[in-house]
Image (cartoon, rainbow, N blue to C red; front, side, top):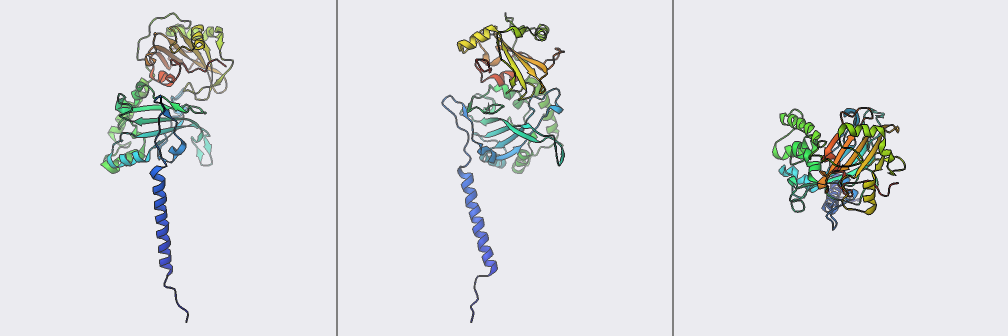
Length: 375
């Protein structure tokens, strides 16, 4: 007589399912337990660039403010892929608050193609930069909200480490217009939904608070282009008076400086479009100071940067002039940018202590980022 097996197809299937689920459970636990370290810092207090495991964190969203919708040029024209550390997201989801130690990573991606088989649109191109923000009351006790901001560059190769930006460079917008603890949660449905799940409070485009915050952000964005200090009268090769400066730039007198780059190179900053051509000219005072390796440049030091369109046509200038003995977090420098070669009445920025300007230039040698000796 042939014996029947006591193991039915159902029991075999159930056992296999239990093994599979158990295996997945332990696999998931192993991954989430230690595979997502938070950024570390070097002896100078600079953040060490995190490894790409942040791409496995919780994905928050991808804002995009393209040039097409922000003529003539958007301050931040790239895609911004934003990630939050899984532990911090879990805490936010449960409590509705960002915990001390929160880390968010922003990976910048250039706008690539504008057409695909699915239709016309904006599609991601190449990676273009990396930034991070951290909430840390121990490391940054004096920063607003204890938030600090870092950038590892807006072009590759990225820097291995980065110092924190001055608070004013970033918090001017975040403090004025971010919906929740210096974070623009109003533009991230993943965060809005997470908080709503834990606290019952939601925010969407039909919400009156959302409209007020969006309006406030539009106003706050203008703040980062506004001067924060008075411009002292100084003797410099490049004038600081608006009309005289534009006439000076149009005349091309700065081209008489001996210290000038041999040709155009791709910009790493938000001058026009990241990656578009620029060319730098240094006056003799700044040239001599850079050659001497001075930590602080003399009053009167000045630099002119020609800005070109992608097709190579000159489309404007950026200028920096030292007006105070000490840089004073960028307030000791006069900043100027205009994106026209025919009209100088509406510069993008003009004056001392412009947050967007000194915020980008903060890592430089007394705010001068130009590679020296000039190439």
